[in-house]
Length: 471
Image 1 (cartoon, rainbow, N blue to C red):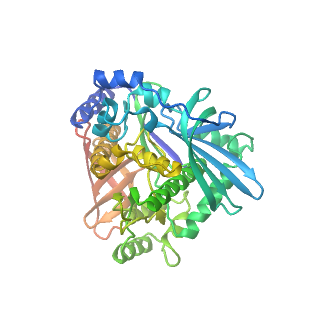
Image 2 (cartoon, rainbow, N blue to C red; image 1 turned 90 degrees about the vertical axis):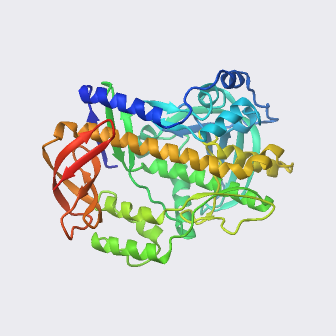
Image 3 (cartoon, rainbow, N blue to C red; image 1 turned 180 degrees about the vertical axis):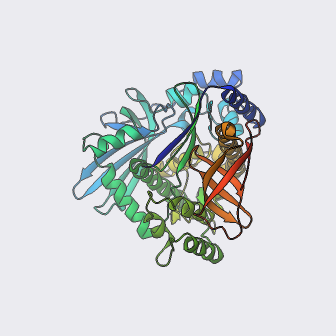
């Protein structure tokens, strides 16, 4: 897939960048170090030993290279004309004592934050990257979803059980995609097949995936920083379908039980659709027929105008939030992009809300009462997630801004070409090709997205992440 890396090598700019990233951490008002009592409780924490033993199942994990906080493991099996998908989730509800020090600290944090110079975890690393993580070659308690799929990838039935598992191998996306492309066997043999069927089911439901290129700040071997922008690999999209399927199953369990927390998003209104149609026409890639999800799926990722189209489509994917309920089903239950009710229930090591979803789903599956601690605290979870989401968004965007300023520092006074990604009157968003930087810029009258403009770099302030360019 198309990928671009722009590099900030060790230099004065690199030193300034390191200082700026450290200052950004300080400005977040987010807890970084864990209090002593939290670490002590995490060290002593143990999860109940499940009665069900699934260690004979050859589970595998699939994550970015080098990951240690492994939330999910899978096993794929053909059965008749259909499939069995087992999806194991780290048993965080079993490790975290309700009302304890780890629980209270996790509620303060809300989610793991990923910074360029290291992560700020939701739970102490002894749990998130060790004893609760589904690392290979060790026994782990897990919450295992088992799905029966028919030949078209539709779910015929599913169940959730607490079980003891042992993952056999830790896979990463790039290596696994290369192995699939070479036709090699392994635990992901059926993933392209099942993932492709689930993508087709998404299409039939009327779902839509935006799949904007990832933008990530990474460390380089020479100690510098780089920005990598790339489209997700096919294996990432297939793998994501397993998580989406599980989230939909969790939502259905909670809706049936009339207690839970859903991830919702409203359908775009007609004005949003009309505006997007005009933008696609201006870009020369008009959306004229069919559903917007089908249109986005058919875009050519190698087309330089696809990025501006996806940027414009982002306005259709707004308004996501959480809704809680206990005793009555809410009026709004659907996540519009998924085209189904959906819940976050597959990343409890990294996201607070998933522990609540999993605790409810397990109780419902076992036919037991939903724990009192869940009911007592459920209504407050959306606010905690919103607060942590704002911190994560600020960290992500400001980190990229600082690195982009460092990339442009050597070019102050120079002229460069840039492609207009979004035009908003006299100003817009432009994408500079080399270095790979996105910036706000003045535009000539009548400029449309997709046009190429010539810019001069006026200034680049690494400390604030601000960049000024002029025509």
